[in-house]
Length: 284
Image (tube, rainbow, N blue to C red; front, side):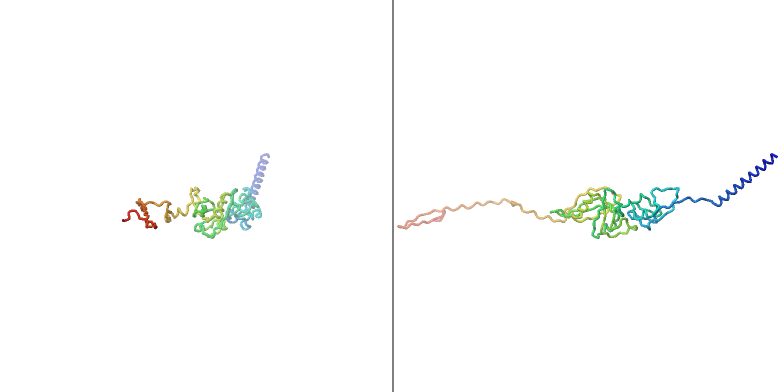
């Protein structure tokens, strides 16, 4: 009797456990996997260069795994539209707070000016800069040609290793490297160097000399004048005559002839008197 009960209990237990396993297996087959939860964050839909103001067509909401948090992200596109980029964005790259300039700090060029520096623009009279290959990011030396008061034309290097931040109205180089003629060039300078550049433009002509971006050495130069440049072709003027003319040879000094002595003879004829003068050595 007791044996039957034990066998019956074991059989019921096996049936129940099998049924539970079957139900669980069916549920698992009906739900093979659970998708992770996602959130929406703002990301770029194309490459956007630094210094640009984000537009509505530049960004969109992108699915992002909720279990992988990303600090500084945005959940609304309105929070980033109109703000300027400090760093460039790639396609599908999330837009973060660190990539954007503070609201109200300005757009475009101003966000690229480091604290303590100045962006100084000068007009270049439609001159092709270094055969047209003058782009944002180029490094140049600034030469000034002027004529000092009472002197001859002089050319000197006033600034070295200066960064070009805009060429014309472009803040990014041409993607295909195409040269172009520009009329305005903007340089990144310290306040003191900005004063030097503006003074140089008022004194004479300013010319840019392109240099290797990896060359940061400051060369020691001195002004070059037109006299030095044309030293071999200039004809020296004759020396002015001196106050005392040179004696080419000792000339014999001729003594002055002595004045001849004159003798006076008084002649008396009756009551008449007369004088007659005879020079010395006159014949008798």
